[in-house]
Image (cartoon, rainbow, N blue to C red; front, top):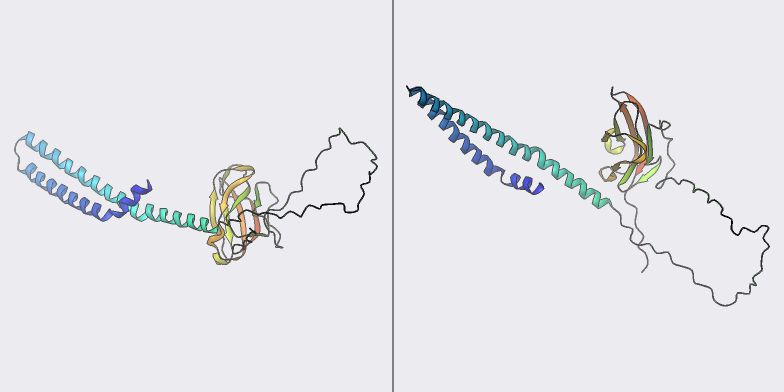
Amino acid sequence: MTVIVAFIDQVAVGIYFLIAAGLLFALRRYFVWGDEYRSSYFELERDLSRYRQTNAITAVVVLLELALIVAGIELIVVPELWRDRQIQELVAAARVDDGVFQTPLPPTPSGNLGIDPVALPRAEDFAGRVLPTPAPTPTAVGTLIPAAPAIGCDSPEAQLIIPGNGMRVFQPIPVVGTVFTNQFAFGSIEIMGPSTFGNFQVIEDQNTEVREAAEFSQFVPAAYEPGEYQFRLMVFDVTKTLRASCLVHIYISEPLPTVTPPR
């Protein structure tokens, strides 16, 4: 499909010339058969002239519609494809490849270190017993920096898990949380900071409910200059009334330098 659109964009001028020639030919036939209609005395000849006039008008309409389609591809479709390609290039440029990280192992001691093994008494025989493994403590995602408290994130209808409050963002990240309410209409992801001139800018509208914590969008920081930003999620019902919101503070920075692993 992209190849076809690009081909039409390249030959658009030639298509316009062909359409113009077709319009002139169809209009000429319309006027010629109009004269035939007015100068005919027999009903059969008049009907034939009227039919040919109708065909000429149909050809004019079809050619005009074709011209509108080509203009739409040039003015709307091609710029959108170019904008999507630029966004993909920004995302690809923002990816950081950390390579393969290898942790050096300490050397294995050899020989007798002068330590005699001593059997330690056991107060209880744990053989055959299965002990429950404690659940790991949740760890905040990303590098967190002290920031102002999050605002309005106490409602389960609008939750932001990623990005977290105070999170440093320097590469594309998934937006993870919950978005739902009674009579849900849509959710709005917005950002405000140095690049938005002090106003909240809509990043994306979320039209699907997310009742369990899951990824529902992606945030690409490459389009914004470094600095502190307010990142918020707004949830609206069918009456466009705000039902819940969650605002966190994030820090957009340049990509962190990658340490080259030793070879």
